[in-house]
Image (cartoon, rainbow, N blue to C red; front, side, top):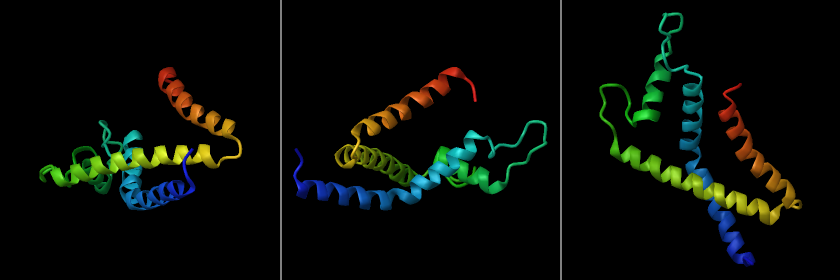
Length: 128
């Protein structure tokens, strides 16, 4: 069993890591969303012209560079890797805290399972 002091430290770590990582997590969530919708790409028939800001920010997301002429930033890529590791750590801490503090751990299991099964089903079905 985890002591109250250790649990308090883990909660504090989760809080501060989450706040520190939030700007980049939001950036990648936003740019990933519009990339999924292909809003950063011009249509082949010319009926849609992507706003430049979407293209530039998507280039940061995909290639860690600002614009086609800029070189890839290794320092930015390193921050992205650290952010990814931090996001994984805070997610795991959040799941552990959900099991520790939830009154119904069965609901935590159901939601966690749904969070795995539903995306896999939708991906496998090829349906919207």
